Image (cartoon, rainbow, N blue to C red):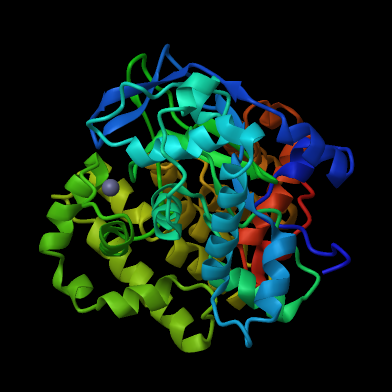
Length: 458
Ligand SMILES: [Zn+2]
């Protein structure tokens, strides 16, 4: 744990800050920004939520907030190492450390505004939102605002409930994959494990998000990933929205306690209630297996190829609307990414026609689907990354290169646009786009295929 050899692939500190890590943390820790958003108690999903106070363009920053309280990696890691004598998963240990951090703040008279920020979450139900203020949620409330809480007798279990309902964990990485990396490389230090961001906890879920979050250490940065109208609710996805409907449905129901009624789920439910015979033979376990990219043996890869072929056949059906096609296809992004990498590995020499076929028939519809309902997720950037590499290779290998120049320009523009949406102004600068592309390579876990390319074209 002493040296810091591996970057946390989901942390964008290095993209945002040129200075060394300590300076970057010092800068972000005190950084607050609240853009054109405000709290409402008339949100569609659960009463409380965030809405836009003016029209917002895709890519605009919505807010920046440091964690009010978080579980430090330096505290969690030693306990995880000695877990044999003190049983517990990484998730349980992180929760325990966060509870201790919260209790230490509660007992500190100077930290009552911070305490107020996360205690507010206890009463932040649909029926009790009138007292919520942004200042309170950011831990900057006045002393009077916090005196209404009775915090002397709060139990560990009540704190755990606040954490389970509101805290942000490693997000799009799992605790399991961090544990695996710790076993493989004991030098890996994730910059973030578990923290409370009470203001961000106000945002409701949708599988067609209009906002995305990225992290720089323990600071959360939220961007609009779609245009948002005045008064429209800000929504983001609690889980990777690139999962298929059955998996999203089960996770949201069991881990978050609700059945998602977003327009994507409503739309997809019709399809999945009576799926075509070719898809209905797949059990929930087989979907989980197909989506698990750590499984990459030939059998699973062949099954993915077969599934993509079946899926593309099904999506040709005339009675499925374009919107439904987009929604379904995005739900299989994980399988598509694995399939593309596998297909690329099988291409022994550069076969321009084969690569062009992949780009036109598989990648282009997938990109359009991602743009239609899940713009600029990490997976979308990864898919664009594959497309960009594909067209770059085709461009280099073809004899009449002028024929591919426009296509190369098209994919370069798509990559820049997606970086702009996800990282705001960062996408303006070509050097930053290149860095962002390197950043998203992490999602392409496979060691071979085009994940190894060198971005020679931007
Ligand atoms: Zn949904």
